[in-house]
Amino acid sequence: MKHFSNIIIGFGKAGKTLAGTLAKHGEEVLIIEKDPNMYGGTCINVACLPTKNMIINAHRGIEYEVALKKKNALTAMLRNKNYHKVADLQEATVLTATAEFLDDHTVRVSDNSGQETLIADRIFINTGATPIWPNIDGLIASKHVYSSTDLLVKDKQLKELVILGSGPIGLEFASMYAQFGSHVTIIDKSSKILGHFEPEIAEQAKNDLEEDGVSFLLESNLTGVNDTLNGVTLTISTPKGIKNIQADGLLVATGRKANVTDLHLERTSIKTGRHGEILVNDILETDAKDVYALGDVNGGPQFTYISLDDWRIMANHLYGDKTRSRLNRPVFANTVFLNPAISSVGKTEAQLNEAGIDYKVLKMPAASVPKTQVIGNPRGSYKALIDPQTHQILGTTIYAEESFETINIISLAMQNHLSAETLRDQIYTHPTMTEALNDLFDQI
Image (cartoon, rainbow, N blue to C red; front, side, top):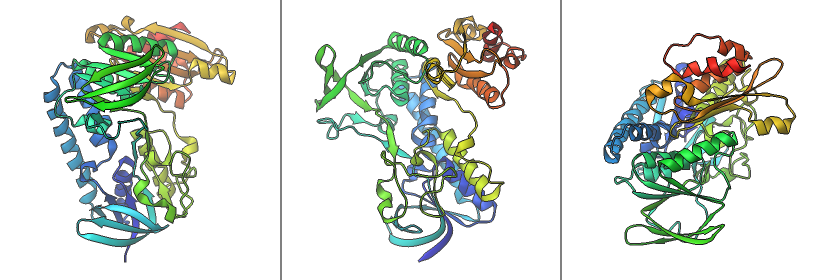
């Protein structure tokens, strides 16, 4: 039985970065990844980076097949780079194998050469999340139903695509495929999309998606999937009755859950929540001593940058002053990459009203920012909520070009309790989208 000081299960953002930190401090570390196509984690291989590369190339008017080749080359390069960032470290070893727990600190690994039992002083679980497949007649058996991972490697563009789910993944694929020239239909049981954003901005984004070639069947349920010679027939229950539509394929984008099935956590002291997520305390430790869970698998916000912050918490706990925890995470934003992207940070009007917090609303159209005219996409708007007395920023939603960059300035201001006047009076380079903050906060 081999002994390791540290074992990391999963080559995700937090895991690979932690492996480097442990090795830097002279600690032996083994990182186990079952899929050689997932070195570097979800973001690099099947999520953030490849999808954004496809989205950008769709906006540039590049044909789907050409964009796919560019994406594949990008992910291959990043995967290789991330593998060597760990494998080339003197104290680190990468093992391509499946892993399952035998007890709190004993792991059995399996590959083509057989099985081996390993024991570790500390174990870090970083296995990410996996798609949720709803129980719908014919869905699992269909040859034309895809997860986002499957669709990202599809060698031919689906000209008629149906998407089940209007969350960030579904909407980003809808926008991407519409930009490639496909017709897209989104099915969702909800009555609206982007429910966590300001409703008037969400409605504006929906109208723009419809203009781009996306249709919506809201307050609707997919009840059946039947394969045809070249695609699928989908049976949908809508407010107007049963509807059957033909499509080249169906993307299931109904959310993701913790990827724990193969770990056999029932053999350990590790507890899981009602959605299968690994339960951890504020420093990411499970109920098993010196066993930690980082990233999507612990049920936190499913963002790569949160996984990276989990690493910061872990590194601070192991080698720092032990002040970092999930309780004092910095302010962070989120973005859905549409055309243009929509980003938000802090509270919405509805949330402030529910909490009984007074606020002032500042709004402006994106078209008033010179850079939108330069880019050629004046769609969108800005909305900020500030404290009427202190002028602290309480929340902001930006639906505009480069919102994913501008929102980080808002996050930084909120984290450091800067007043809106600070952003209003800042000198920004020209022409840029950040100049919008001069005018947005000039309405105080």
